[in-house]
Amino acid sequence: MLSPKAPVIIVGAGPAGIVLALHLAQHEVNVLLAETFTDENYLQQVPRTGSIHPSTLEMFDDLGLYQHLEPRGLIAPTFQFWDRDQGGHLIAEFDHCVIKDDTRFPYVLQCERLKVIEQAMKMLRTCDNVTVRMGTTLESFEQDGDGVDATFVNEAGEREKIRGSYIVSGEGGRSVIRKGADIAFEGYTYPDQVLTVSVVYDFDKLHGYSYRNYISDPDQWANLFKWTQPERWRVHFGTSMDDDPERLLSDEHCQSQMQHFIPTGKPYEIVHKHLYSSHQLVAATFNKGRALLTGDSAHVNSPIGGVGMNSGVHDSINLGQKLVAVLRGEAGPEVFDRYTRQRRHVAVNHVKTITERNKKLIHERDPQVRAKNHEMLARTANDPKLARDYILRTSLLTSLKETEAIL
Ligand SMILES: Cc1cc2nc3c(=O)[nH]c(=O)nc-3n(C[C@H](O)[C@H](O)[C@H](O)COP(=O)(O)OP(=O)(O)OC[C@H]3O[C@@H](n4cnc5c(N)ncnc54)[C@H](O)[C@@H]3O)c2cc1C
Image (tube, rainbow, N blue to C red; front, side, top):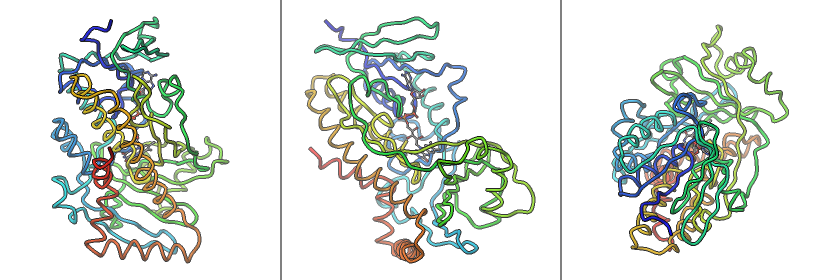
């Protein structure tokens, strides 16, 4: 028999897991949050970007998290599309002011994933009903009609079994829970790797770039984003899968990429380099009995458009509301099927669609198609109604509206 105090076990303290933990803790649900990283290396993870869209800022505000993030980020009301071919020019600028009546946050907050999890973890540590187990890795789990038994390897290297009411995977793409529940992860891996180079340079003051830029180029697409504290710009370049990773990450190669991007005649101050591959994968279901998936464990996508973390947070708030209702006896477990219907719809029809379209747009090689795409972007940005529809979609506000109608 399961104790009524048995916690919801959340595995993974990335943005999706930690937001779910906060939501449940604030609704008086006992939580056990387990994370492979230790207290010592939790904030040493490779920096990933974090363009936080208005829909997610609203959720962070409801959790009490936004007020801690805003002073650590950059407010970015606009984003731009550039054409790098033939010298480079601005194609279109979108301004979030067109959605000022749709949200209390008509902008994106540029605030990296690490800052989000650092602040959320600080808040979580103050909650009496949350146990955080750092340096603790899920190995396997079993479920019965009553609860789940999860086997972890703890910081001391010992195997430990913990009983919970539900187990939620916030483990990211390589989820042990998804594999253990035998849930297919369907889709594909892109045939190119993404090279990320962080530099100290004034792209805004010297060249007129906004804080978020998507750069179309038939030879090599790029994205350019500004970050603060410390101040730096991160450039993402598409590269070939056949290229040697060591060569791609060499100083010489990164400098030549930057000089090709914008020639300065002197070396860039490079502060970080990183190489990663990207995928479009969606889990066949986000719930199987008492095993539930949120964030990247349920769907991974290309980062072009910055919606991965955002949609993971949206999953967690949706799932959190349903877990609270079930644990209070106000709803039956069939609500988790609705969770899959709602959030899988978003993963496939919004997150995947937006990021695939962005990638195609900046990667297009055919001159006629490029010209047509660019004309369409400029027309959309310059028409307030079209621009509003476009930004409601890219900021995932439309996706949240649609999920309400999914029963
Ligand atoms: C270069 C890059 C740029 C990006 N930019 C953006 C952006 O601008 N906006 C955006 O919305 N998204 C962006 N994304 C995507 C975003 O980073 C991910 O979608 C997001 O981090 C997923 O959050 P998550 O909590 O689901 O998983 P993760 O962030 O991957 O966290 C998973 C956590 O689980 C832990 N874990 C894993 N397995 C176990 C286990 N078995 N036991 C215990 N712990 C475990 C891991 O250590 C980790 O801490 C970007 C991604 C990349 C690569």
